[in-house]
Length: 468
Ligand code: NAI
Image 1 (cartoon, rainbow, N blue to C red):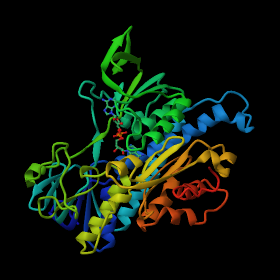
Image 2: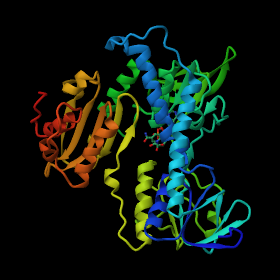
Image 3: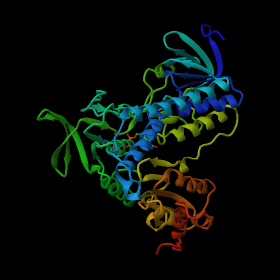
Image 4: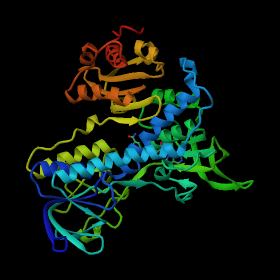
């Protein structure tokens, strides 16, 4: 196909992240002639290139390093000589992981017969898209899946060197002596953990009364205790006000309980959220305008106000999560193909990949109370789980929130080693409308950490076996 003449597609997708490339694959599976426009060389978006995947590679290697340096001896593993870090090798390993996965997506896209365009896509109107300066394509259906970008603090703009976003904090070439993390959400806690394990003095400044907003207070307090034990200096109720030089050293200034504090920083990671990315997308050419926060409004079928243009992922309502974007991509492809695509927004799991990990799904206890839903809550501590004791993984708890009237599971929060995997069974129970009793009566292999999820299900009716 000549790319100089106007190529026409059933569907053209702008953005090759988890929302866009998954939508493209599902479209192709359904027989739609599909184009995928991505400005990065590699597909996979933020998630594969600079987000979820590289950060998980760093979390993994830093955890191994911390174990070798700290706890190996307690486990009876004597490591002769000093344990030292080769950050260059760490980063190369991370880059290899990213290359393997982005290469895999590239191969999948090619094999499905999806036409890939490398360049910045811009809407022109009348179903047309211009890629780069001149190349034009047209499509009956256009899907916008352009993702999000880090939020900048107006008084502390990113400089890419000292004041950085996660894009740079996954790629420092030396371990900063001191790292100030602004924002105690998923990014701040994950990357704060990575650099603390590698030896940085990490200080987390969080505006709200608790880190890990979105979890119940008892759960986030528990997490805070875990991270403090690991050496993270966490200040909540702390409003960052700026940065200034004191004695030739950069300090981040903040207000805490009416007092000003100044924390020295070799690097500052600003992780205060992400914003929808629709820059230079040509929205004005088709008569689309984002809302005040930059989101594009869509209906239940991902239709924007402009016929033939749809939007999914981080640029529309809902959590900014790769798996949410993927499901929207699948559902929208099916809807375009005349099938019944659907996303269940009530059961989207959320994970913070620290050690221990924290995961959640559905309603928290506080949210259920706010909605005036009568609930029963079951809790089980990992400290009472045999496998956890045998594996030195007793830091954690499972909390199940169930409807008092029907016993249907409404939500769960898990703090545990591997909480990201443990949450899946609760998600599945919820997807099928399962009750806490269903969870509690489901046979779990012994000894496993997952028995603590079963026990929390039983604890909802005060029938847990291994706790009082
Ligand atoms: P976030 O929204 O999760 O957390 C930001 C935190 O910064 C909040 O606790 C907020 O109260 C605090 N904050 C905001 N302004 C502040 C200020 N001026 N001073 C101090 N604290 C301030 O945002 P984050 O961690 O940057 O993540 C962005 C998005 O990416 C989120 O939607 C998150 O779900 C997603 N993500 C998900 C991951 C995962 O699933 N594990 C990993 C990384 C990102």
